[in-house]
Length: 71
Image (cartoon, rainbow, N blue to C red):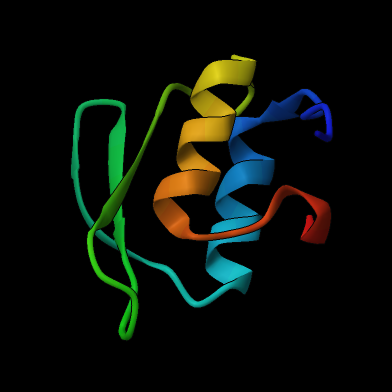
């Protein structure tokens, strides 16, 4: 199993948008992304300069159906 590397919120958003996810709505610091063909939403929270915790990062990739080794 690969270890997730530490990423900033801004970097996570770039990866999601490169995969086709678009910003659907925001509420405070929570951003919810949708994909035209994948089901569900992915929530990314925090300021853009903050590190995303490893567990949260793995959950984002799981929800977005993105494999960690392709990042």
